[in-house]
Image (cartoon, rainbow, N blue to C red; front, side, top):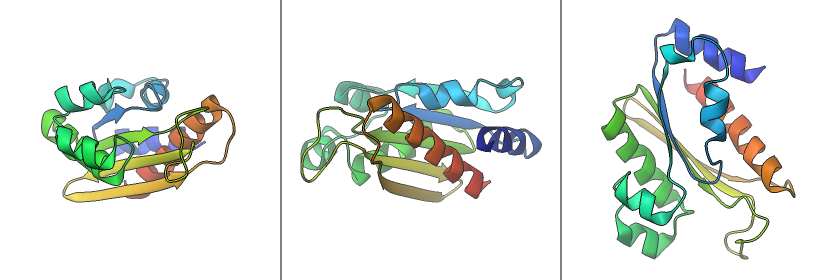
Length: 154
């Protein structure tokens, strides 16, 4: 299972991780802390669900959200960059998206999720469109994709 792989690698390589989640509502944090010894690597889990919390806690510039929206590459990138400044974790993750069932549009459909990863100076922003029809399934698909991305950079 991908979670166990990530868990073992984080411990072996003595890496720390912090996450800022929006549409997954803490599900990634829950996965990452579900195995024993997670305290060796897990430092912070922020649920920045509202635009206000993205602005207040993660210091995302209000103008970025006004211009591009909370579900955008630009917002996701600021979330992960600023999270890394706050936490000093070796790996930082940000997630923002539309889990549905409503809230989507033609330009930003339900299932659109941006995942940001920052390790050292390397930043990756992954744009995903998950086709699952249920909110919970989109959230689970997002967490699985995030774990795959984490696994690929460690």
